[in-house]
Length: 327
Image 1: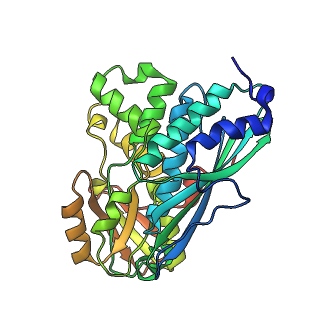
Image 2: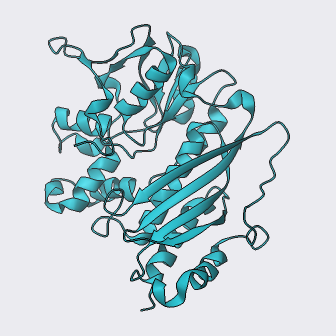
Image 3: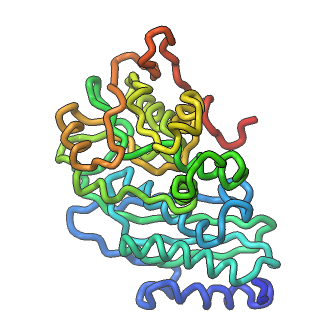
């Protein structure tokens, strides 16, 4: 099996260039022409072996797909349609070339759905496999989605179910915990983790009004908290309205299911804040798990309200979810 160190940087780049349009690559930077009246949107995301993916749970193809999907999701969260991505790799010399090519195949499989090319990148030697993607998109200035645009009285919409990706990861790490699930249910949850879908399809349904939002890659609770902090507002989330996979019904306790949804992360759905009437219309158009889960308030706290009135409202905070470098 050919090793990366055996063909070197240039040899590897030559192989990877086959995944890129020939008329774009070759210079020090890619020139992307945007339409008049469009804003260029750029986002960068890094994934590290042992933190974001591992051979135990993710094939190189799936790692590539997930990396591409994460960046496309960031563009969707800004209201932007993708133009292209660049890819920076940090690779151990003993890593097989076929692993790297499979990684690119996974990225390409995801990107092709959205007509998005790989337009360049960089390769360096590293003791740990890492992958950094910069994605470029465009959006009309009046259609940009910002975290800071939430208004008191806005409805909070999620575009789909939450907790599925975390459940899929749990099943991959310990298949025995899913013994009460059907094969179809396990497959669906694992696919949610390995092959998430960025919600670029939502953009065409958004009304021509100011919308606040972001994606739920770091968990549903994190998304609502980040929006509220940027907007200087608070929120009430109704726990009973959070859409969950049906597989959770007889598998997890209500507490576990809610924890997966709030803090599991990597569901890559959009969390949007807009007027109640517009939110109701949007939910009807999207279907498939889209729902209104709460309301933006003037209180700067984010409260989780339970249907059982005997359970007091819970104040949510960023410290409850995953944070890099935390203990």
